[in-house]
Length: 250
Image (cartoon, rainbow, N blue to C red; front, side, top):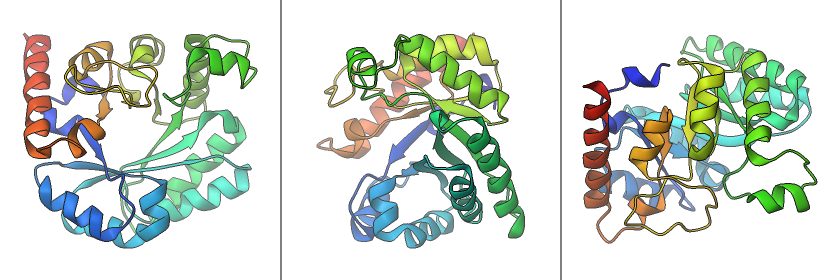
């Protein structure tokens, strides 16, 4: 997926359904009908996963199933095979699970989708959670590499293992775009408009900065979903991105 080919800003923004249950998810979907790409994470999936995924498919929405599998290869493959049968568009796993797990997960996701004759998800690997600050990486996780070097290694591992892309901080997007090429999918959380709070993210950029850095998709949650008027916040972000995309095209 070459990010340069996605010219509609509405198709570049993934909004998280970070709510506790089905009713709250439906309320948010109804509040933001223009959103085309939604993320379903652990809380909502554990609460009501199959039902909300079915509702999103019925509404013809694209789905980012953000469950970040991290286990032994056989267990990850089994979960990915089941996820492939949901017909989702993106599926996350942790790159640090290692190449055997990444390859097994990729193959199983394709197999699961084929069982019900739907396109397989793009399996993408989390390089490093955007909530992890550099000092935590070294002091708490005991990783000797700096953040950029670590993210680079995890993204290259994902690519050589046959995955479609990676999840990374927008601060690493430019480097990973150069290393992994134009078709490697880069999904960037940690994106915050200049008018919003940074929250618990440690490594952030504005939407237009992230696009310029090479992000394929932006995950933007609380600046939209917790705004006084989510629809207005959504439109403000699209207006900013539309200006950036027009400049990049000219």
